[in-house]
Structure formats: C-alpha cells, structure tokens
Length: 173
Image 1 (cartoon, rainbow, N blue to C red):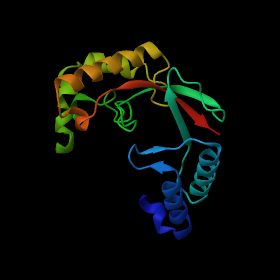
Image 2: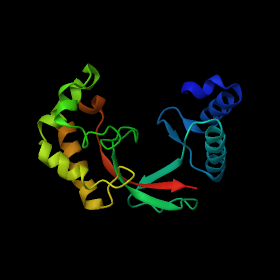
Image 3: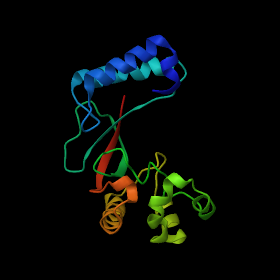
Image 4: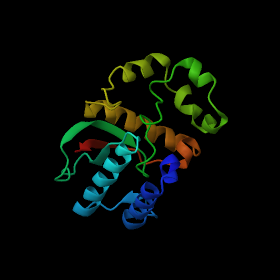
C-alpha cells in the first residue's frame, strides 16, 4: 500500500477496496460495475493526492472485453497468477550490463537470459509499443511459448510459476 497509506483517508479507502473486491486465493479483483466504479473513484483520489494512476483491465484473448473498457493498449504475457509478466519485469528491455549486475533475487530467472540472445531480446523490445506491450498477438504468442518452455525446463524460474498466456490489456477511463 506504500506511501499513500500515510494519508489516512486514502489508506482507509485502499484497504476497504482490497477487503471488498480482492479474492485472496487468486489475488484477482472480482470484476463488476461496482468494482470498476470504486476503482475509478480510488484512482481519482490517488491522482488528487499526487500518485499517478490509471485503471487497467486485462482479459484472455478469446474473451469479450468488459463493457467499460475504452482503449485497447496491447498484449501482455502473464503467468498463471496474472501478476508475473515478462514485459512488466522489463526482461526484454534490459541491457547486458544490467543483467550482469542484477540483484540476487533474480538469479533464479537467469535461464531466461541464457537462452535468449541480446540480439533477439532487442528485436522483441523494438516491437513494444508506448505502453510496453505488444501490438501483435503473434509476437506475444512467441514470448508465451518461450516462457512456458522455460517454466517446464527450470522449476524455480519465475518464482515457480508457469502456465503463461497472452492477455489483452485495456485502459478504463
């Protein structure tokens, strides 16, 4: 919950949102008109208090987007927890020097870098849009396939998570 919990009003609203909408087993938010409305209100409150936020919605590629989605922004590749994202971890945009000096917490993910060259990573990084996502579903599918192959080869990579899949990402306004 970070710094915004220091502001009592904001912190209470964040905790209430978490208690009301988040399924603690899956760590996913129950999607409904109420959760969307309350999330929009929470984003507005956070923005007023100096924390830049936007409401993102993702869905499987074969799902119809939720009725309140307004702008498709690209494809991400997420593990089964929907939190672990190779794009979100910036694995495709890291330089060789950054990889060499990574913190020990990432050492289990080194097979990702050992099995994909700088040139190939750079080619994929050049295909990311302004949101750091892929515009092309086939490109996202290649990364999905690679991550699932890695998860099958190395038990500890991606903190033991697997079952990567391509998801559509939207901004809710």
